[in-house]
Amino acid sequence: MALSPRSLPHDGHSVSIYRNIGKRVFDIAAVALAAPVWVPAALIVAVLVRVKLGSPVLFRQQRPGWHGELFEIRKFRTMTEARDAQGHLLPDQQRLTAFGRWLRRTSLDELPELINVLIGDLSLVGPRPLLIRYMSRYSAEQSRRHEVRPGITGLAQVKGRNDITWEEKFRLDVWYVDNLSLWMDIKILFQTIWKVLVREGVVEPETGVHQEFMGSRPSDTEKSPK
Image (tube, rainbow, N blue to C red; front, side):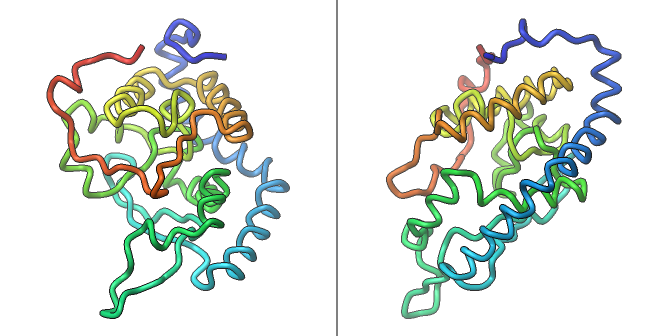
């Protein structure tokens, strides 16, 4: 089930209809139909987070979304609120617990993002919403990833998730923007479920915190996705 331009035929008219109308309808319908599964799971995880990490249960942060407009993303909290003697939060790697690592590995921390999908901030499939400070570091081509709603999962996640470079992720994001279709979204969703179950492409850094994107060299942005 490898995703590639050849395996995803479509015509411009059908893509336009799906991009403008169908994709939103698909998101709402899919989340609603899956509610008997994800709602109980989210409630169980919420209780575990409250017991193991305390309050608040949710992590909330402003992220750039469609056309760069900011929205509040919701995730289950994976870190403690541990602080130093001066009252400052300790570094992320010191606050991330074993339970938090497990939530991230299984992607259960992202269940509250389904609420963002219902609201319309996120899509099920699209470029992942990253940090606000990355916006000024994108090249003009990389910024095109904001031409669609960001997603809970995306082409970059099923092509490598954490074991490909930022530049490779962004090239895949832009390719998705130009080629999205219903068939592609369905394949990405099924591949995401499979990769989470078998942990394929999940490379956990020793610190538990992923390397920050600091910008690309011009030569790094000129390659095309394979």
